[in-house]
Length: 392
Ligand SMILES: Cc1cc2nc3c(=O)[nH]c(=O)nc-3n(C[C@H](O)[C@H](O)[C@H](O)COP(=O)(O)OP(=O)(O)OC[C@H]3O[C@@H](n4cnc5c(N)ncnc54)[C@H](O)[C@@H]3O)c2cc1C
Image 1 (cartoon, protein in one colour):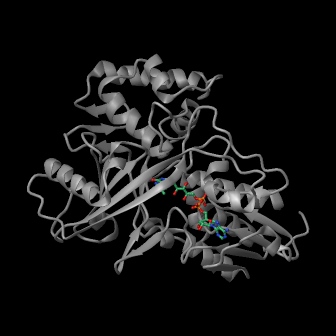
Image 2 (tube, rainbow, N blue to C red; image 1 turned 120 degrees about the horizontal axis):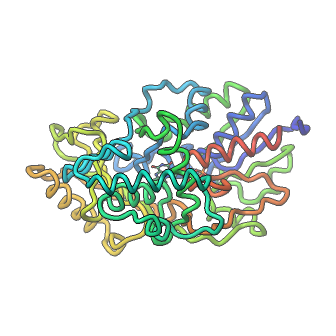
């Protein structure tokens, strides 16, 4: 182990930074985490909006997020903080996909072709020698019709936050390998029942403090030379924030947005399911915060990746979401309030041949640094653990 007597400074208390902090604190290393924002969590955090606690964006996790789930246990988060549902994609038009082969309303031959595609990818070792787009890959393996529209496209957009025309087949295959092609339970959906700061970053901060470390919110690090007193530094900022601290290794990425629209209906309003797919308009998924967090009547619409919805202003987008919900769930009353949160640089674009930063002598963590995963919570957590282990 390196000499870390003077402690480790971690810049950024997103999921990556907090995963690094917990991993070091567990081994008795004194850590100090610096975070610009008022709460830890970064791109997965609680926001206060007109007196209401919301998330900056609804998140979905899967059973394959093994390192994230392990760290939740380490910091003492109870299992019921996540609602675990066997993979079921349920759409407002009545289509229901349970795994790959059990799909109500989908022609048998399409399901067989999907099965053959998965078998071929397994034979390829879930990796192509030359990376192509997900659209090209799916065309090559004749994935069309309902499977393309209701399974592959939403899986790609949700996991890679990149449209299939631009998304990397190799990153998509890494996701398929670990979910649909993985162990039992790997493709289960896990939905948070706490806000995203309470779910992991805050219990992680408690864990760090209980092990002699510090987590300092509202403290921006302007330059790394200000952290000379520490033995080592882990830089766990977002990809677009790296430029200020480490211009020499930062990469100019393209980014993809995620829009989240909260619509508060009267308290008796319920979806009947925690999560329902919508594939007819802008909205891709709608979640019932009443079923998840007890916030009755609050529905959350999610629109991942670039698209025509970006041409609407926030009021227009909230109205469009309300219209789409009314169409799907006739009889819905008027919303009492709405709120759109636009994360314009939610993640980097996951395109073929994506470059990850070359770290040089610096220890980097962050969802964009993972060599094979899309920018997700699991990628962030793994990167934090990897950064901490590099010092141990
Ligand atoms: C709306 C939305 C929905 C998403 N949905 C999903 C999903 O369903 N499933 C999923 O797995 N992933 C999802 N993601 C992606 C996931 O949230 C990210 O991959 C993950 O949060 C990235 O964590 P990170 O720690 O790498 O980076 P960040 O969360 O960006 O953390 C970096 C932190 O560093 C801080 N910082 C930056 N500069 C400084 C500085 N100079 N000094 C001090 N602090 C600094 C920032 O304030 C920030 O808190 C979503 C993202 C968004 C935005």
